[in-house]
Image (tube, rainbow, N blue to C red; front, side, top):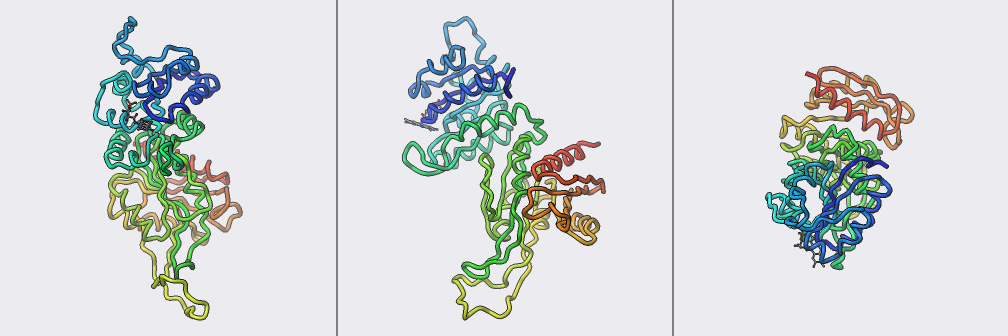
Length: 400
Ligand SMILES: Cc1cc2nc3c(=O)[nH]c(=O)nc-3n(C[C@H](O)[C@H](O)[C@H](O)COP(=O)(O)O)c2cc1C
């Protein structure tokens, strides 16, 4: 009963995925204890009738703004007096209307009253989703703190394959749980996380890389979402499945990661640089596969670009949290690295200790702040480490 005593207005709009909302409503009410009032747009009612939603919510479905019932202020009550307005499925149209302050039916008016208590679970054709107008509308609302449950990639009702499918029921419920029950330490913040190794290609198939598994970065991205952040994960190749409700950018080389990272300079509030960017790369890359007989005896190397330095040069404001893997003289080296690269915090781990660093599910780290405050986090799983890193950083930042 994770939603006991929570009041939710469920807005249904005219998308084919509406049939999934009946099952979702049932779970919200019966399994999780939420109190739900449903509003259906005119288009939504072309797809399904209110009866099923009335039955599962135990309340009349609201459809008209100018109803004959003697409750004249429902367009305010259903936005003001609830914990969340969940629009599921959310059409491109309702997102566009909200982004422009349009209030021409009951649902859009309630959303205007609720403001950023509103969460959109997007579902639409992939072209509608990719349209720059839709993208700009989503961006604008995200910047204002509205919630978005991103659609998934897969078969769409229109027989296309692409990004546009409504997220699955559990993902929606997890999101609601996080938003209503989480501490929201990063509410409204834009967080960029880099994770995993990079690959520096020698030829078409061979590369130089390292043992980074990406686990620490993925855990940070997931925990930041739980705290209400708008997260972008930039990841090198890993064996991990991509987190479902996080915008994920896949890259291979250090240069590619640098390019995608710099796109966020000037807009990110926090950067968690958990990727193990490969420091060295072949001086030249052959585009075909080298023959065994033609392999060079020695490989000429160059140093990869320094992502942190270039990001800090482009963004003086962002709070940068770096990571260091150092054995001998680890503390001194980590502090020096933090200072020379303009980081605000550095998380040091010593890979010589069993159960820490690359590939393990656990870690033991020390966090240093620019002002030399430090916190030791004893061995525990990487998810808990991620949670604690976020907590310490936010708490420290709040100190006068
Ligand atoms: C069969 C069919 C399926 C549709 N599916 C979607 C959809 O999944 N997402 C979407 O944004 N629009 C979809 N539309 C278009 C919307 O119904 C249309 O933009 C409508 O004006 C939305 O109104 P509303 O946002 O007030 O509910 C669909 C239309 C039809 C005819």
